[in-house]
Amino acid sequence: MTSPTQKFQQNRAAAEGEAEMSFIDHLEALRWHIIRAAIAVVVFSLLAFFNKEFLFHDLILGPSRPDFWTYRMFCKMGQLLGSDSLCNDQVHFIIQNREMSGQLTMHISTSFIAGICLTFPYLFWELWRFVKPGLYPHERANSRGAVFFVSVLFILGLLFGYYIAAPLSIQFLAEYNVDPSIQNQMDLQSYLSTLTTMTLSCAFVFELPMIVFFLAKAGLVTPELMTLYRKHAIVVILIVAAIITPPDISAQIIVTIPILLLYELSIHIARVVRRNSTAKLNQELAMQKAQ
Image 1: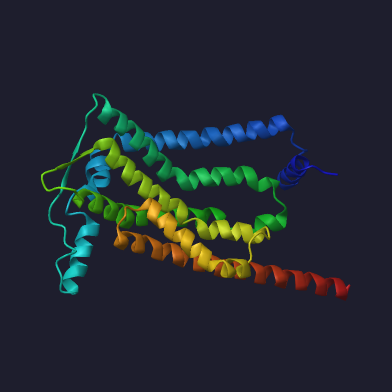
Image 2 (image 1 turned 180 degrees about the vertical axis):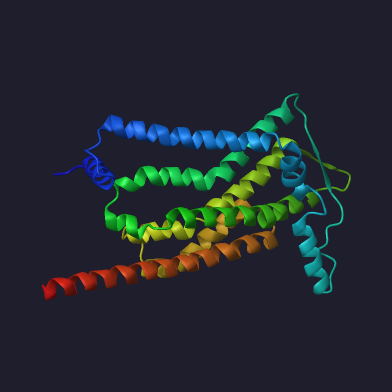
């Protein structure tokens, strides 16, 4: 009986037209994938590090200023609705650093996170290059375009988190106070933690359709199952939205809506996967009967 490791080795060897790879060969191949990925992250992290003004003033600190794109769009939306309540024309908090090496540490760590985000499509591509030879030909065919769609969903999640979820959270937390005499003076680390947590959380949540796609391919998820547990999924989505957003109903609704749409899209994807699998199975049975 062939073990999963031997199957992986045989498939990789068959795909590359080489002799069966040993465990050491797999480690060597993995090492080079990791090295190339690490080099890419370092290069883009250095690029972000040396563009400090754009990284911090324009990008990181953008949601802390009233002229940020999201606040301007909400203000225009409010004016169209005949209300100025959505306009945010002043900053209600001050960002400060209280540690001697705080700004340098934040500069390095933020540059590293930016490097990972910028190279995410390449990182996933390197992972896919390592896994792909171990798949059967039909498995590789079924997973065609995985790198593209995973990258697109990740970027869309980043944009949604940066322009929608994070600004709403920052604005709510900045304006909230228990007494007018208390001034909000946010620590730099706290501000960055809120911004990165919101943005990256949305980026990974947006990968739901691809996760369902692979689970449906493996036969672990069906559209009927997802439809049956839709009510339970809505509760989970509301909990997730409550975790990644502050206790603000409007922000939670804005974050919940796209996740619900992604869940409905995932049901459709699972339905298409099953339909294609059924059509392929019927075609194979018809060919067998013809023979």
